[in-house]
Length: 303
Ligand code: CP
Image (cartoon, rainbow, N blue to C red; front, side, top):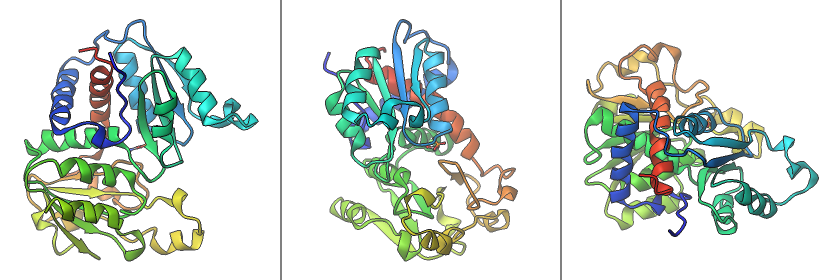
């Protein structure tokens, strides 16, 4: 069987997105399935992570696989100057699958070209975070009952936020999405993504504020301003608290509307939102386990 990687969300087509949704539902109903018994998965995290790494490792454990790897590259031979090429070439002799997060855009694609075993991109710089997108889609289909006709507000750091880039591309495969981008000019959605939507005839709107217009939203997708991607700390200070979602702002939103956030949050969702039934971000993170079980099983041909 030819090896499959998941580096960009576009490595899967619409049919595969729907297949992952169906498999994730099955893993949510029955999480412990020994499909990875006898297999080793390497989790190589060159950047900090809580949810992505731990949900992957939970997914692997629930599938009966074994885990090797590192959560901090300073404990690896990277500190001695070992290249990404050499690390991946060697780890692909040890493991049956590599899950990697790295700060450099394009690093995951490069790793997939070097590796003999499938590579899953767990986030490469400001570029892509495809497994987050699939769990976001699973969260949308679970709460809205559909992936067509979704009016989504993406709020915050749309420039560096890789999750919104991947999600935009995936939702554009479905019928009649409407994208509302809420960001200051410094953090606006990059032109390449706007050109992509225009080329597909998909509607998008840009806003500086959103409190007066969120009554139409099916999903409000909040994002953290990505401090680690700023070269100048003063520029970060200027925009770090640009949008803060508060409970009182949700009064006129649809009863079915849900608030998503890839997490971690800093200040962009006030704690008074957490008990509102429209807050879905902690369940969204839980959905990551089922979705990542589905992705691993699909890529490795286990089901
Ligand atoms: N959503 C997400 O990628 O979270 P972590 O950075 O904690 O993995």
